[in-house]
Picture (cartoon, rainbow, N blue to C red):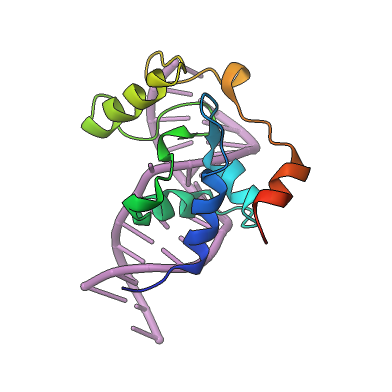
Length: 114
DNA sequence: CCATTGACGCAGG
DNA sequence: ACCTGCGCCAATG
């Protein structure tokens, strides 16, 4: 079982997104200290061990869209999980104005130890 | 070692 | 709103 140090930073950052809020891939990369590596966030999420319970469904594209192809199984699952926590999903996308997570940096610094 | 691959982002047109 | 190209870079084969 190989270990993924960079991916772990991503996982822990995503774990801090509150229920009912969403973040973007780029935002998570920045907060995790990996600016410009939005693509890697998606990769890391696929590697996340299930027992960690990473709320991957709270991560969206910079325009609020669900990254999976519209209509795909994954897209439906993500939309479902979001609606379960009262996040509105219309046309495969979320209104970021309304649901974007605006973390308190002090708290973030406390919760993430890097 | 070299090439390809992404659950991306952004600037243009 | 839709499309195209380019930058990005760890991981994979």
